[in-house]
Length: 251
Ligand SMILES: [Zn+2]
Image (cartoon, rainbow, N blue to C red; front, side):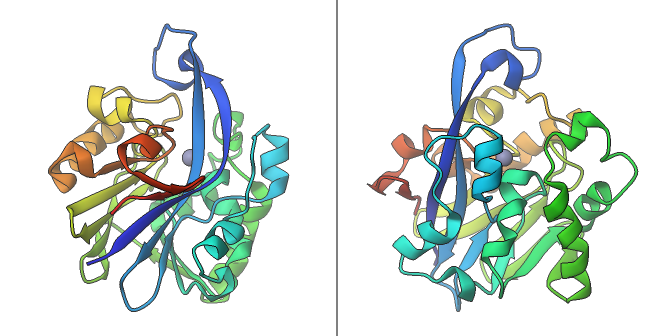
């Protein structure tokens, strides 16, 4: 059985109409930015790598704390993390790779192909990229630090990744056996609970049908709404147990 923690690295405001698909409301919404830590196996497993202070500043985030510092508060040295599951390669999930010099990064091959391919250069996609971090991905691959996978895969017994797509070409989510039952870390397959609960997509899309099918997959894997962990929703802190500011015990 595994234990899971959501570790917050910052926050930023936007508006509902800018974020949700065909949403008329101009209400202000706040995104929280996380990495997720899975304990209880033979070694810690990190889900996503966060980002650096450079992106936090450039993109107007408040309250930046580096993912390495958040892991330190959990008593874990970032330099020793051996496995990081990368849900997708947007800046806020990948650009923190440099905090984890010992990690092997598990990424869907469709995701790597997209961000190193012909379409990524258009503004509609480039706005979500950190080009320096994506260039480094190629070097890390030649250094045998990238494990490219396709589809669903068991990482450790009771810990699986599942290809979803939709928001990005090879977005993957993580399911984890815990004492509460199977917990699903959706990352950006469901930024907010209203995505997965009302089947409302977001604006940043590579495939709308995949995004909608992904909501069904999340429900099927979790089996209960209380075991779904949305990727950027401040409500995660209310639905689960906040241990100290920025550290939420999921299970
Ligand atoms: Zn994100």
